[in-house]
Length: 136
Figure 1 (cartoon, rainbow, N blue to C red):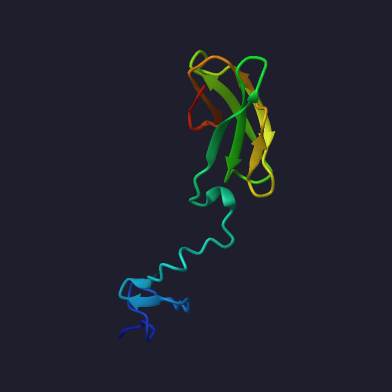
Figure 2: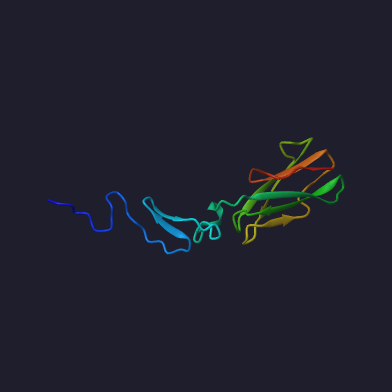
């Protein structure tokens, strides 16, 4: 019967045309070696990108007892709720739980999240992601 493969296509392989800068062809497909362009994430939802969510705690203003927890969230899903749990050395499992909403960029900030005079260590979690620890 003869070979019924179409010209230009090897059996089991489909050659793709990639016209991005830095793309090159090989026997295993098209590869982009241009480090300046990086992966194409256009159209990828922000929550699925490889960006690490960060929770940052700073010592805030003086409170009734100790200091306020000043908290910043970055790279969280946009326009969504995050559950925060305040923690310290005396209450490592948490002593206050509440929610805040991120903005359209996935960022949130609260200067008076909770306060503690117990120490020495203070930290917070947001959706299970632990912040840095601060001593006071």
